View (spheres, rainbow, N blue to C red):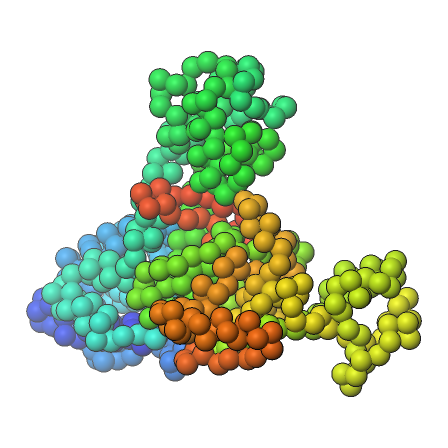
Length: 538
């Protein structure tokens, strides 16, 4: 597990304790306590790896500075503040986090020590420092996620918009408000929390029935398994209870199956085959963990981009354009195959290329094209591919030893046949990944669209290009359209870079707030769940 990072956000919040409620400010610690607190801070907790500094301080350094600003006086002497801390830690379960990661049971057991002036100073100091460490970790994890997101840097903190409100709550002695405001303030995050609560209740009630394996269930069939299928769909609200009985596959059941398939990103054909059966038989407990994993992803990414930005939802096969936090445009996409996965990262779109040619990547050249060329040299001409040497000079295909081609590159000419279509949307990254048009439009009609070699094919790429250039009127769009019509390869820089996030989420939320589940096409959930379940040592 990567080390955790601390941002200035929390240091300023913790410094607010020095201005906190009068009950705190008025407390005069016994002489031995500052020395004991200093000693407790000097000994790093067992098993804790020093966090990588984000703004020049680690989590432990933040705690030391907090106490140092208070002359090492205890923080949690107010019963109200301590009780609210415990309540806030308990509430982390609703975010998919484990309250025991933050020492909840230990703090509950030691709660009387915090405000007992006669308690042993070393014991009292140890509990106070434990409470502070728990508080630091909890707020940080709520605000930025427990785990370090891959290839993402910490988001900047808007002190005017965020810190002031939380400091005000702490000055009023309202620790719970600090917890509430550290959470992502979005409808999606709130809906996932609600979905987690509901799914946990389903799991606590025993979950749902498993539909046995067998032949594909189809409309018009009669099968004993259909009765179980009806009960399974009713457990998630796809069928009313009065429709549960019976072993016939009627129109009502077909409609319920199609709605289930749509919510689970499956082909909505009304047939209960292998993929639909597998989705039906994922347990409620497993769905709880799936929501927990995606709550963590939400904490990592919410607010990472402001203004105009683009989000590629890899597992959802969708790209969206956001303006001021609202998705104003969406389109279907095709992403990488399981063995050529589309990566997760953040970048900024800087340019588009109209009528691009395509230099075939080495992996596609070796694994996909060379075998076809060996079978039929005319494959090159049929696909408008030119053969170039290492200096970029065109050479005769017949002069190449295709059983062991060396020092050659294939380049596909611009045109409607080109694998990149009529436009490429470019952003810097180490993976040679970009968004582009495609001549293979039929693939967008598939429910699961993992067919590419890692790049993202966009169904309506020019609608995205227009928005990147703020081309809201016909005249502005005409400039782009004329460039395409010319047939010339042209690279056009954007007026300003537009952030782009390539994310991998296996849940989604419908407009009515219902949580939907996507297939984990790359199998990434298990690794994240394992890391999420690792204990944070205080």
